[in-house]
Image (cartoon, rainbow, N blue to C red; front, side, top):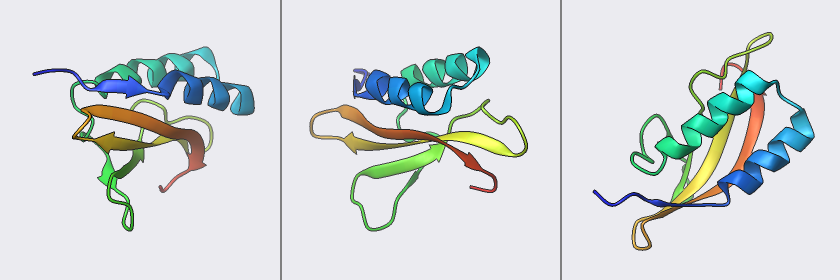
Length: 95
């Protein structure tokens, strides 16, 4: 199986780090998760209603603080076999 091409994930990660200043463990959990999107971009996320290719979900292993979790929204383009990150954010649960 050919891996999906990842686009804009590192820029979105940098933006999230600059805005939220997460600890090293959270940064590593998110970075490790990013690379799983190459093989299985649909796993653990759901399609956002009203958007054909926008997917959203929690980043596993990022639960922290008082009920917070890191989430990500990204676009999957099957024709291009690519995944383009839209944004990372920290949200309160439930998400």
